[in-house]
Amino acid sequence: MWVGALNPKVIDKIASITKDIPYEKAKIFNEQTGDEQNEEVRRSQVKWLTDDAFVRGLLWGYVQEANRIAFGFDVQPVGHIQYTEYDAENKGHYDWHHDIDWTGNAAYDRKLSVTVQLSDPNDYEGGAFEFSETNSPNENASRNRGTIIVFPSYLKHRVLPVTFGNRKSLVAWFEGPRWR
Image (cartoon, rainbow, N blue to C red):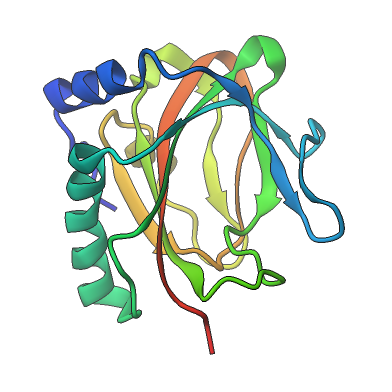
């Protein structure tokens, strides 16, 4: 975890990149039916960043460093980037999940997941990010604006309900050859 790694100018640039992208209701992957909306599991709005070299390049440096220090996975600078908002008025949350589609037929899997805290910690309450199978990040540190967390995509994690305000984050997944 890199606490406060991104400065306000970089976060503002990310906000300007996402400004004109339309919101979508967030979906979850269902192994039987494919992507679906299920507000009991996930309630948030998302925007998809496609082909944004600035954001991808920015995150790739942190992914490489985390991978070198801790994981050693076969991972490439390829994947998806999502801007996410969890709003207290909608009881925004995302229950336990992992970021891999184990039933997929693609030649690649998500290997490393990244979350970037875009909100100021005073803008919301609740919304803690937690892991189920390992120690969760320190909540005070992970709430700092600009904090980056890189973790293996197979770890179960969640975002607890936001009880006040609006929690904004950037999430990305970097891929590599299928897990063996």
